[in-house]
Length: 191
Image: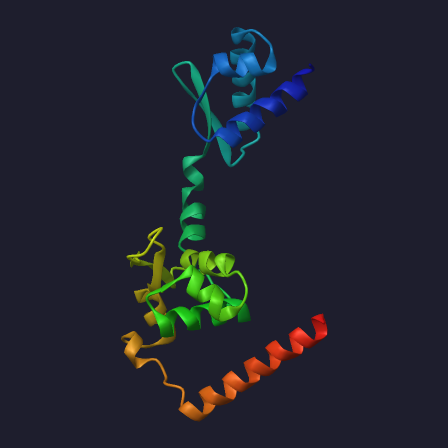
């Protein structure tokens, strides 16, 4: 294996592993001697410094680790403190509405109401910190109950779920009729 290929392999290993990787382990993977690995990585370390890269390789006893250079920390801090703008698709909004109005509610109940699997939508809402686990249902399998979070309240400008707008009964009846029509149309098309 030529030196460039070995350097690329070392770089990939150190980057992917994240933590320090022992020189012996790298030597086994590259099928070369440990001292060759050490010399190869020392050469890489010098070149990284000469080329003034944003990362460098550090040596920890008999191991090596790829790290961000300390002088790059300000950029990392700016990136991690940037406000994240989450966009809510129709699917996410629909799932969030069900959770907000029916909480605490299980995945199965959400799926039953929506008529499709809602696992991805729920996971995304949890990731956005709009929904969280609100306990477990006392039933076989102890399914997780979901509810809204403080972040949900902040985002939608309400102090509690009780402040959510109430749909008037006429509108609810209209929604039910529309849903029933859609279901019957779907059944007729499948026939």
